[in-house]
Amino acid sequence: MATTPTQTHSPENSTFTLSFNADTDFTVLADHCELFADVLIESHHSDERRSLCYRLVGCLNLLHPTLNDPIPPHMIERFTVDQLPNKTPVFEPESELLCGYCSTLAQLLSKYTFNADEEKQLTGLLFELVCYFADDLRAPRWIRTAEGVKFIDEVAV
Image (cartoon, rainbow, N blue to C red):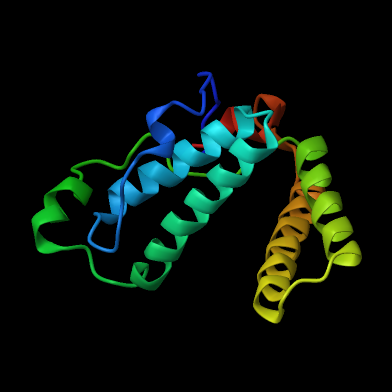
């Protein structure tokens, strides 16, 4: 769920007082994760950023073991649609940004010591980002049509 952060937040904000636990609905936890990431990207204070990271990790740790659980019966209707949605979640950072993500992760992995699980997760993320980046760079951009050559995005349905 990529969003463009537009709000400014302060430590007094409810972001730091949101309560959640193992009984919190997974959709609420996902909303909290998105909020923490949004506030984190806007924050310029190291203590605030650290606190937001801890809160984000807390939500992610609660979500992780439930990711393969079936949708609860009382929520089935919420996740049922009559038509395909116009939009689906995609990860489409600009090439420069994606390259920066890959470079930063590679630098972190080369400079710092992590425990085995953290290193595995960071290395996996780096692998996924680099593969996505490389695929994006190698992807065709144009298509020949009866009307001439067009950008693929113009004719893709």
